[in-house]
Amino acid sequence: QVQLVESGGGLVQAGGSLRLSCVAPGSGFSIIAMGWYRQSPGKQRDLVADIPRGASIYYADSVKGRFTISRDNAKNTFYLQMNSLKPEDTAVYYCRAGVVVPGDEVVDDIWGQGTQVTVSS
Image (cartoon, rainbow, N blue to C red; front, top):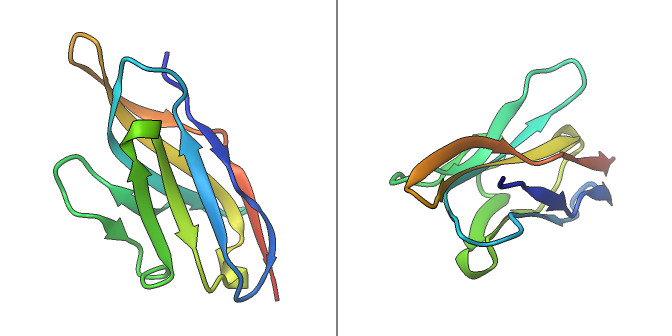
């Protein structure tokens, strides 16, 4: 069973930077789509950035020019570099991935456990 493990959240002052990581431990599968979402208390979980299968990278308007999603296929890891952070970026950030497992089965909708990002003003 493929799992995702997140790291990199924390407390940072406005204008600062953080890099979130999402790793899928193990082998025998390939990550074919990945994304980052965030959820603030009382709000829905929103897409921040993703690399869909066979499509272009997407960024929410609120993070364009500040956040960058990237991947390291050799490490089964993808990242969210967050620069020029604002207090309104405060949320729990979740990674999500779709993978191909042996037998060419696609397993979608795999989520990480979430990591808290808090930006102080």
